[in-house]
Structures are given as structure tokens and as C-alpha cells.
Image 1 (cartoon, rainbow, N blue to C red):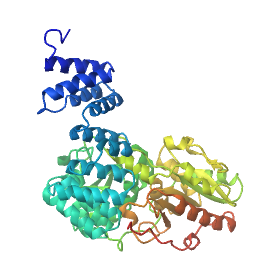
Image 2: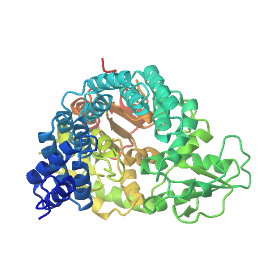
Image 3: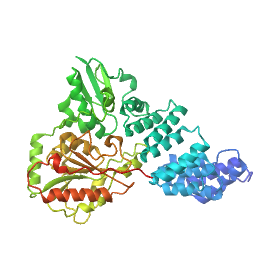
Image 4: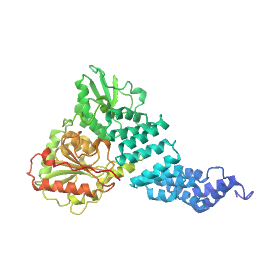
Length: 513
């Protein structure tokens, strides 16, 4: 009926196309909208309107299918290709995104998307090449320079990475994310003194802190007289960050400050011995100075040589620890080793799923640990990953059903001899408790674990086993298996694992050539 009066009416075709698309008639909708696009070559393709409608209706897969149908009718439309590629990247399909883009050679925007897809697929050299070509075509692109800098950082080319981030910040000096990316590059390069101030830009990212910034002033700075003053320390995003940097709270108290800890409930019982706990959202209590936990290294002008690494600075409940130690002893003698194979996915953080996929190994990767003599394994894994199928022969006690918060986990960790974990909060929990840790570290590792070394200035009992190839856990897992076999074979039941027994540091990964 819409086209009865005038079959050439573009508005009628648009409305009918939207209606057909909403009903799931993808091919019919594509034909109608393609006709509208031909009639209006100077306007955006109407498929964008339909996809937006389908997204609002909760039909994102149908919206993606509609883009595919539209692109099949207009393969020369670079805009459609880029939008489809962006959607596929969002859905975790970098290969599909590259296929959707086709040959991106003449378009800086398409080259940039191709670089992102290649980076997510783990091909850092190819991604670097695409970003270089993108900024050559569009040297004013701040995002292009920043992404190039991140690829160079991953390849260990720190000076070139910082130079690229400098270009990015010059082009968009008020964009917080660009400053944060530059700060991370400075941290990786060991230029911590410069990095801390730059990293404060993270507080300007939308939604980064649950408290309005104007309620968190004045902020704590180096050299302030804290005698008799109240300092509010606030949690930001990761549990591991707070567990790592809460070590500075006693140093503030040593300067005469009264310290309040604004942390989530999951950390409250564990951290209560370090100061009064307050709610991390809502109206904050009265205070003189505020400081997020992640800003404490700035306040103390931290460098790798000045980190306060005395452990333990966290404590587990002695009675609960004794209970767990007795329960674990009931299983017989042997080295008691806790395992963590995956991090928290955090789907609410844009882009974090890709990072989590690189840092998480999955339980299947732990197959080389199966059947090691003299070693008994305990799961410390939380969340959906705890249900992953166990490799054949890997006996695993799982006590996590009784865990409510980090205080409960701490009691289990304190009863263990060693923890083997990917880069999660449990690494910081064990390190802060003084329990030895084997860290399974991804190739493009976090700045805090440094480069070229297998120990850590943050935790004296930590040993790093790092990937030598992006995404390949076989090398570090084989090293962990060998180290555990040596420890388990000589294990005197009930003895305390000492630093010397951790073995010699293994060489860290080199750069991608």
C-alpha cells in the first residue's frame, strides 16, 4: 500500500524497507533500502537507520545480517564496509572484520580498522604496518598515532611508542584516553616519574569513578603535611589494583594521617585491619585529602627501586586459615598449589574482553600439570571459568563454593604452599599475604611486571613465566610444570616454601622482529 500511489517514492521505500527489516525480511529490506541509496547518493545509506532500529529492538545479530545484505548489493560502499567491520570487531570476530573491509589500501579509516582487527587477531607486525599506512594518509589522526604507539609498545620499541603517543596528544590534547595510553607507554619504558602525572588523566574518563570529581578535592599530593589529617583512599576498577596499592596505607599513617578506605564489599573484611571501611559510592565522609589507590605511587614518587615490598601487608583470618590447612592436610602429603586460569571478563568495559582473552589461559592449558608427583592442586578460580572441563588426570580440589569475599579466599591462599595464576587479583592477594606465586604472564604484559626480568619489585615471592609468542601458553606452562615437578619431588610435607626454592629467574620474552 505504501508504494501504490508512487512506486518511485523514496520516502515510501525507506519506510517499507525499515518495516520489512524489523520483521526479519532481510533480503527484501536490502533491495528496498538499496533503491533508496541509489536515489539519494549524497545521503548516508539508509541501512544505518534500519540497523539502529534493530539494535534498539534488541536484535543486533539481525542488524549485522542487514549490513551484510546491503553490502552484497553495494560492494563499492566503503562506509558500509567500515560499519560492518566495526560491528564484527565489537562481536569478537576480527577475521570477519578483515573480510568485510576488503582491500583498505586507499582509505585511512579502513586501514585503521584493519589495524585494530589484526591487533585483536594477534598479528602485531601486520597491525603496526596498517597503522603506519593510516597515519601516513591521515597524519592528523590522533587515534591512529595512539594505536600505532600501542603496537610499538607491545613490540618492545619503547622510544618509538612514546614518540607516537606524543604525536597523538599533540593532535588532541584534551582527550583523556590519549594521555592514559601515553602514560602506560611511559610505565613500560621505566619512565615512572613522568608517567604518574600523565596517568591522572584516567580520572577524566567518562564513568571512571563512582564519585563526582568535585567531591574528591583536594587531591593528595607529594610533600603534604598529613599530621592529624584524614585521607580518603578510593577503589577504582580492578580488585588487583587496590590489593597492590593498599600497601601505601600504613605509610600514610606513619606520616600522621587517619586513613579511610572506600572499597567494595568484596574487599571490606580483608582490608578492615588497614583502616576504617566506608562505602565506595554515595556521599563520602568528611576528609581533608582524597587519593585513588592507583594514585598512591604518584604521591610516593614510586620507581622500581623505591617500591615498599615488605610482606605480608595483608592478613588472613588465623582460625579460618588453620581450618583450611587441616582440611588440605587430610588429603595427604604434598605441595599444595592453588590454580587460577582466567580473569574476570568485565563485559561492561569497552575493549576489555580482548585483553581478558589474552591474559586468560583457560583450564585446558594447564594439562601439562596433570599427574605431577608430590603436588596437589586446589582451584582458586571464581566466575564462569570455574566450570571449564578439567584436563585428563588433573585432580583438582574446589573449595570456592564456600567463598563469599576476598577474606575467604585469603584464608585458603594462606593455607597453600604456592599459587600458580594468570594475571588476576589473586596474584596480588597471594603476593600481599606473602604466599609464593608463579605468574603466567601474557606476551604483551602489564607494565607492572616490567620487562627483561622474571622477578618483581612488588612481591619478593613472585616468579614470572612469560609467553615468548603472543597467545602461546605452551612454553611458560612447560616451565611451570618442570618447576613444580622439581619442588614436588623434593617436597618435605609441611615445610615452608622459601625464596631460594623458587629457582633461578627465566629470561623474559624478546621483542617481535
